[in-house]
Amino acid sequence: MSLPEMGDLSSKTSADNIKAEVFSSPAVEAKPLSIEEMTAIAKKLRRHIISMIGKAGSGHPGGSLSAVEIVTVLYFNLLRHNPEDPHWPDRDRFILSKGHAAPLLYAALAECGYFPVDELITLRQLDSRLQGHTDRTVTPGVEMSAGALGQGLSFGIGVALAGRLNSQQYKVYVLLGDGECDEGQVWEAAMAAAHFKVDNLVAIVDNNGQQIDGWNRNVMNLAPFSEKWQSFGWYVIEVDGHDLSQLMEAFDRAKLVKGQPVVIIAHTVKGKGVSFMENNPDFHGKAPNAGEVQIALKELE
Amino acid sequence: MPQEVSMREAYGKVLVELGKENPDVVVLDADLSPSTMTHLFASEFPSRFFDCGIAEQNMVGIAAGLAASGKIPFASTFAVFAPGRCFDQMRMSISQPQLNVKLVTTHGGISVGEDGTSHHAIEDLALVCSLPGFTVIVPADAIETAQAVRVAAASHGPFYIRLCRPSTPLVYNEHYRFSLGKAATLREGREATIIAIGIMVAAAVEAAESLKREGIDCRVLSMPTLKPIDEAAIVKAAAETGAIVTAEEHLEHGGLGSRVAQIIAGQLPVPMEFVAIKNTYAKSGKPAELLRRYGLTAEDIKQAVRTAIKRKGE
Figure 1 (cartoon, rainbow over the protein chains, first blue to last red):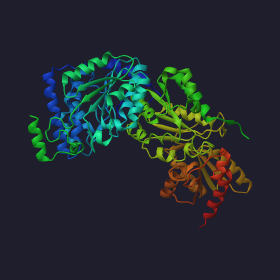
Figure 2: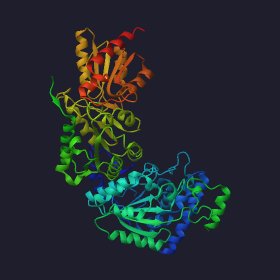
Figure 3: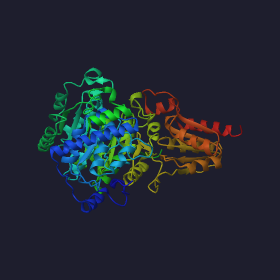
Figure 4: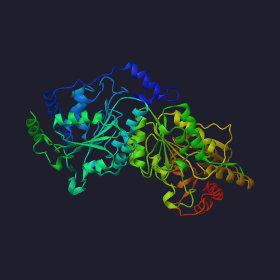
């Protein structure tokens, strides 16, 4: 294990570790890209997602494709991070709570340079660093082991509180699924984030409207969704989750909010970008077959 | 009677000391801080104390996030609620990534008493021991509690420490040194070995002293570290005494007895007897009444020792 917090605490406190790393690590800001450049990257990420899941023969394309623009803006415009030094203590944190969207995160991390793009194709294979759901112990850049839904927002609060206690300036971004918000823990965390006034935390909900058993409104109605977050004490921003400009603007606005956490409800389409996957819950957790991969990649040219 | 001291109070006090020594120590609770005694830390270090309300899943998740960012979080509630209310969170947010979270729970077992079934933690050890990488400690008294909490703070990785509600007789004196992963031999003996955890350690000593008067010579091992367990001490006890009795304030499956039996079965089978709660829930009652009703007294240990010794020749 190479994580900085894995050191022998009896001989060296974690505070010492943090100080040591601050001096050894350059503060790298993501080079902001233009909308055109990000549009191209989003398409590239979608192609990776289809190829990876197709090769693996299993995985979750629908909820990976719906969050592509969100993750693109974060990794290619917003986050202060350093792929050369994934454990840089002052990095902004991106926590993928909906761990089944791992292929999307892996694609973004690879394109940022955390590991070779060639490695993406090993998704879900024995001994691969790219596990079926995210695993912070093996993949560079992955902050949290997720996949059991509902746990990421709590984890994010902990990371945000640590940053506040240390007077660090980093921001914590947590991506949730809308179906994931069925979990009670999400609302325990929503209450706590407002109570602790963690304003260095931004939650983003990939609000694609669907979960495994169908439309949310039929499986377990979340409405009124925005009002729920508001009543829990959050500053709510709603955007078209496939509109890069709207997303960038939302993240900028989120930075200005003080004294309360911010949630960006990003309205998205499950399976976005591949005609036969769009709004099709069958592709929540099913891989495209070889023919479907070809059609999908053609659509994403 | 030896002096009776509260493990919980020992925990609360040592937390305050740790808080003074290391600014990275933070504490979380789930609306039970006067009972778990984390309120002592809260009043000393309010900015490093997070009351999460009655929401154990969220508390465990926040603790994991703090640990992932270099803090040393101690999170406390009753043993029946952690792991009971937050097992998956302990599994995925703490155990899998091996994060440096210390769960210290109080009100373990049925000596909780009158609150009844809903508050009796009798399966927590089975659940926690099932999680890879968790170190599990069940101290025998307040002195061992303070030392075990210090060891947990100084060691990396997930810890679960289970304390009881009532004040208990001191088993150790100030010269005792808790050693992680090691059994403590409290009494030498040749005919059988009693292996005990938690409040059953004092009962085991009492049983052994009483049996001595009957002419039965028992070894007593305290096994404060339930996981990783001291295999060598168990095998040695089997080899040298030929019979083993385990005693725990827990269901008979998944706790101390099961762990010892696995080692005995694999390495050196000898007759074993189990002093534990038998596949049932306990009801309301005074702690001493419950321990009698559910078979967790020195008398029950003595009977188990006699049975185990009798089985040796079979």
